Image (cartoon, rainbow, N blue to C red; front, side):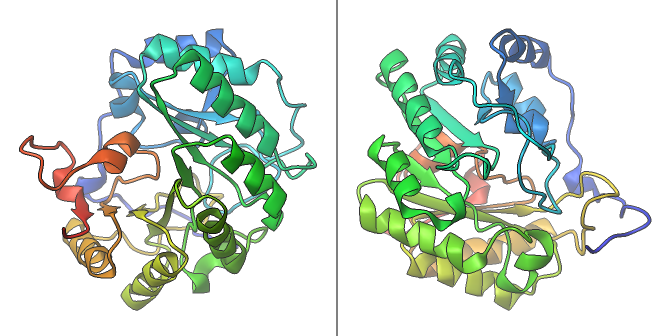
Length: 306
């Protein structure tokens, strides 16, 4: 695994405040309901902003992942059994937060026969029962390529099916040794085949040693399998035990990625240093280029021309 004895100093554009008066309230709600968020577990740099606005990305399946990706800060190890109360607790937390758009992800659960697909389905159903007007986006693992697991999730009818490709093909195996680039593309293609009415979304990190041409090729690959929404953001090294940052991509370069996304015809391309797959997810899903209301993330989104 690539490593470095020290971390590169972050440029000014990658510095964000980490304190928010709402952090404690959201964290207490999550503790009360025994819930995890990818915001906390993956050390997301946007946590103060999201928690400060009373939003969170729920991470189901526990807090221990069965895989060891070299960029991810989620704890790895032998997981606890799935908590049957977790789906209803996620729905309760979403209701208390007043969410109209709920994002649910999960640790990889390769120890479970269906990879946790039915747990996803139960969570979607619980949210729908508790908040019938809310929309649900799920960010799923690859389920080891099992088509039936994917169908289980799609049959629960989330509004958006998200699966991150994470990085370009040349870097993939060095940072995701238990994943497979083509398997992820196949999952996204199957999602479009099995449930074309469900929006398909994917995203990846930059700053891991990829070239601009490789970024464009990854976007081309995602478009080829029917992905509609794309997110692109800077990789940040969680600790010295994780793969090192090869480059901090300057903010202006993300404009090139957005332009390429427009040329390919993605419904929306969300690209910028702090972009993560669930960051402002509802806004990305519903953003309209004809809107007269200025968006706080307008500069990061490029949309398909009408």
